[in-house]
Length: 151
Image 1: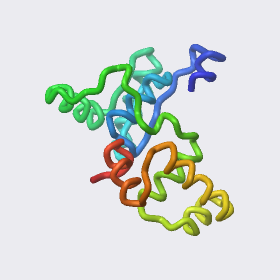
Image 2: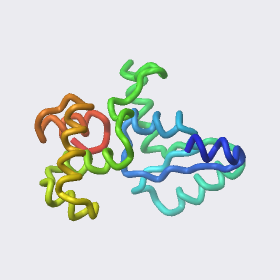
Image 3: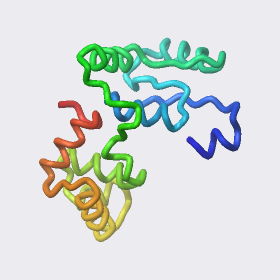
């Protein structure tokens, strides 16, 4: 989003995602998103969100906002400078990471993302090195902690 916002500052960005973890939402907003909507929101909420960011306001889905508020109230909110462990991943590594964390085998990931088996194995090696995870279970635990999978 950074390059998009630099090239066209008036462009408004609304993220609709199944990921509702605080770190993921925080990263999207820091990258320049004007709004963040839960993918399972009602269609009417999409219209409200679009209208809000069109006006120049920000928009956070109530489901996402309530999760963030609950963490703030409990004193669990990360400092604004704290970044997600996943920030070191490329977009393709994120895709591979999520599928592996769901328990998919290398062959299944390769087929789903239309990659060679060797490429998936290399992504897996990079993920394990970058994230310091050495098993599928560790990948899954990290994905849950980062809000990419539901516990």
